[in-house]
Amino acid sequence: MVTFEDFDSFLFSASRACCSSLAVFIQIQGCLICLCLALGWVLASYVRNREIRRLKDNIKVGNFFGFLCPDINDLEHSRQIKLPRVSVVMPLKGFGEHNLQNWRSQITSLYGGPLEFLFVVESTEDPAYRAVSLLISNFKDSIDARIIVAGLSTTCSQKIHNQLAGVESMHKDSKYVLFLDDDVRLHPGTIGSLTAEMEKNPEIFIQTGYPLDLPSGSLGSYCIYEYHMPCSMGFATGGRTFFLWGGCMMMHAADFRNDLYGVVTGLRDGGYSDDMTLAAIAGAHKRLITSPPVAVFPHPLASDLTFSRYWNYLRKQTFVLESYMTKVNWLMNRALFTVHCYLSWGFVAPFFMAMIHIAAALRIRTYPFEETPATSCGLVLVGCLAICTLIELLSMWNLTKVELQLCNMLSPEEPPVSLDSYNWVLIFIALLVDNFLYPLSAFKSHFSQSINWSGVRYHLKNGKIHKIERSKECGSLATKTYSDLGGKHLFGKRGVPPKMSFLSSLARIFAHWHQPKKFDG
Image (cartoon, rainbow, N blue to C red; front, side, top):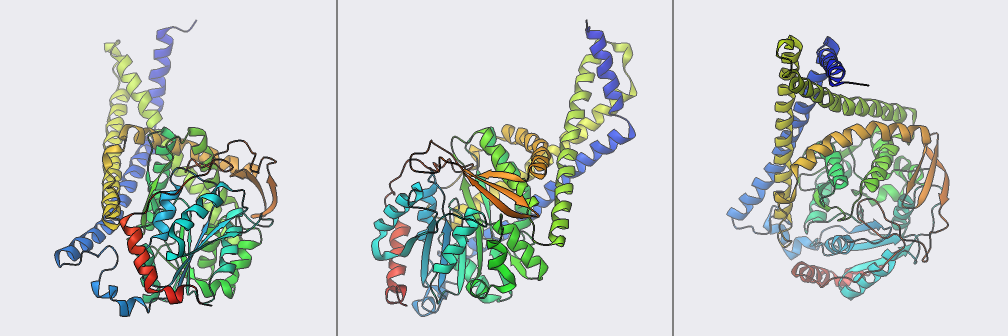
């Protein structure tokens, strides 16, 4: 029978082992990882804060429409009618609690140029079809919007299939195409800001942005928030970036018409991830990807987001590293795979060691004569880790606060989002849980080479989709199925669009300015 003395002996031995040279290195490395994350979030908050100061300066000089454009003179009708045509392609799947508000924010954009919205579904049985139909009918002829039924994909992911179907149906005079996920909540001036950057610098290949998660209170939602926060650093550059988020991508429409660099064939022929595929093409041809500072979007997570749905989402995120186009792309994905797994467990390991040190220090009090240098060394390491973790959490808190403030200023009509709803105890737990599970998910993705995405199982071979399996329940009589983040019924209940807001009315006015052009050709 194991006694307390035996347990204490094991605990003290473990504490001494955690003070070996290798263990000390691992714990110091964990502290450095915390500080590097904190530094990255400080730099990201500086970029976002710079945009907040610009908006405040605009208000001081009387430009209360700075959230639409920096120069109020750009809102003059003579300039607005010269803006290029933009086609917005939105691949849809299922219908969830936040979709209507997200879609409404997209179609009520205050962009002054010709604008068309293409909602793409795989079939009329998708719950999104009826919900979007009702939403469009509510706006009648105020916007140029239509639904495209793309059918089932056979050579690529359903999302990519829907995107390409939207591209094929876009207006012949569209200069730019903007791809949006159905969980993106746009600001009124987002499309105008993205278009202005494309006009200013024709060398831009893709413009992108990134979401700011609004956790719903469950541990799964905080794990997703924590997963996205380190990634957000790569998008808060205020300009050039090497990262790409498929939820918001603006590109030249001509690149798709001409299949430049094989963007269409690369996506269509076995493509699983739209953003990874396009980022690989951009890298291979040294093309520019940018992320403007205003491209941060509030992303409310489902109120009933369970831990199992978080795990499935994490599996989808790690699975993208198994897809690739070229040998160089494969090597980069393997490097990213290795580094991310190493840093994830390198972040978590010191916390397990700290628990051993603390437990040993508490138990050793019952043996006053057993005080050893190892105990003191362990507590010093615990103190260093605690300080570095606190600095990291403060930096994350500050960036979240800054981005929430920026989102509130960019969407002045929306109810302000507060930082008070964030539970920082759960965020700390999510830091440990997400970083512990990431390598497990990555290894599972690597060895399985298959993933279930919204009821469809994709199998990869040599980095490309070679087999697609659909559940027999993919129909109107299917059982209730949920997607990962939005709490969407993939084959479930329909919804009714909400009443129009003040911005919706403004959008109608902008649309009427271009009524003669909206439906030409």
